[in-house]
Length: 278
Image (cartoon, rainbow, N blue to C red; front, side):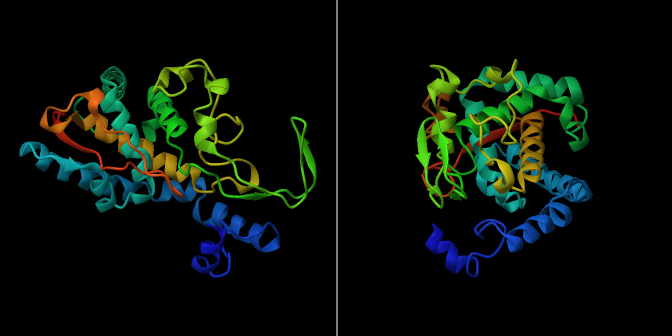
């Protein structure tokens, strides 16, 4: 991966692969203040609303025709490819767990009713949606392995000596499924596990690190979460979803492809049914 980045990022330039130092601090500051700040994310909210509207319109046509749709391709057409994997995994788990799907739809209906679509400014009123996203990212992190870290000074962790300049690779996929951190049901999709806990996604809780932690954490975390929450909420609120060809929820293929990211081995395909009155 590091050798590939040497050629793909013009000699390890940019915020992802460059070494810690003045250049990295400058690029990081540029990203956080000029590209990915809260004000910039809010500035593009109308564009996201327009793109989501186009996505819903295309799915309404598919629903009227009872067509089977390829979910991840629809995301890419709507320019949400950076969050498509998270949305696809989450919707896959909701299809496998009808009770969780029903609870999320009930929450959305309570907040928005059936006479309007989801509005991004009201996403903070959806605690169960946050639990669903957390649980999905626990099982299917953005990248199964976090970007390599370089130990800047010798340190001792749990009795293990980590020498200076050691290259550290953190397995976020394994941490998210570790029964020592998540109990014996660590492999199960159970959003309710977050109901009575303050565990968040920002790298403060080391049992959940889908975006990394510290200064080298993902600067685009808030944008990615905003898109994933907004698009997923819209899909679940506007449509009922069925698996095609009589496939039962427990028969849905959940195979993974291991790599820098972790997409499904086979795209999720489903049949939408429009459920709103508008």
